[in-house]
Image (cartoon, rainbow, N blue to C red; front, side):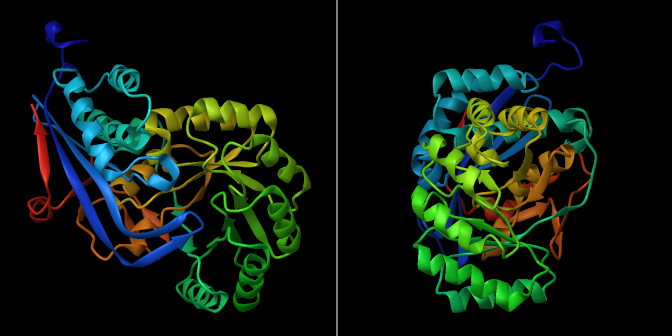
Length: 376
C-alpha cells in the first residue's frame, strides 16, 4: 500500500545520513590478502516521515569486495537520492532500484539493505529475527587467529582455549611448509577436542592447497575456506574431490547466482554468507534458501563490522537454522565499541536483544565526531 492510499503501512523516506565510520583496531591483523589496521566502514541512517529510523553498516573490505570506504561513500550519495520519497517497507523495490543503478558495490548496498530491514521490523514492532520468520537461538562464535609466526599463533590459540572457545579459526594461505607447521603446532598445543577451522583467503594454488589439506586432514580440521582464487570453480571442485577436509566457499560466493553455480558444480561442502559481501540480507536469504534446498549448510561470517552490523548478521543467522557455523568475532579486534544495545557476547555466546528491529544503534556522542553527509 503506498502513501496515496493513506493506509497504515505507508511510510516515506525523508532524508538519509551517511557517515565515515572508522574504528581503530587493537593491533594490525594479517591475512593472506594483506594487512588491516582500521575498520574503515560506512554508517547509514534512514529517516522516515513516521519518525522511525533505520540503521545500516557496511564494511568494505577492498581486498575481497573491491570497494573502499571512499568509493562506497561516493556511491552511497547517489543511492540515497534514489531512495528519497520511497516507502522503505518496499524492500525489494528499493533494492532493485539500487542494483539497477549500480550493480557493483555490494557492501554499500548492504548498509542500505540493513537499514531497510531495521525499519521493517520496527514498523512491525518485532525483533528482526521474528520479522524474518525465525526465533532466537544460541549462536556460538569462533575466534580468528591471524597470520603470524607459528609460536605467536599457538599463544593466541591457547588464550582462546583458556577463555572457553569452542572453535578456533586459523588464517593460512602463505606457503605449504609454514601453513602445515601452524596447524600442527596449534593442534599439539590445544589438544584434540577443539575443532580448527582454516581459511586460506585464496592464498594457495591448487597443488599447494591439495598438499596442505592432505597433510592436515587428520588434525580435526572442520573445514577450509576458499583455498584458491575465487574464479577457479573447476579447481575448487577438484580440490574438494581429493581433500580429507571439507571445503567452504567464501570469496567465490557473492550472490545467489554464484550459489547456484557452486551447487551445480558440486564444488564445495559449505557456504560462507557475509552480508557485506552479498549485498545484504535480501540476497543472503536467497543464498541460504538455495543452500538449504541442496543440502549445503551455511556459515554466517563477517568482515570488520562493529556490533551494529554484527547484530544484524546474528539476527539473520538466528532466523535460519540452515546456518550452522558462526564467525561473528570482528568486534573482538576493535579498540572501541561505539554501539548501544545490540548483541551481547557472553564469552563466545552471542545473545540477541528483544527490542524491535535490529535493536542496536550508534552512540550519539560518537556520531558527533564523525564526518556526515545528509541527503534530502
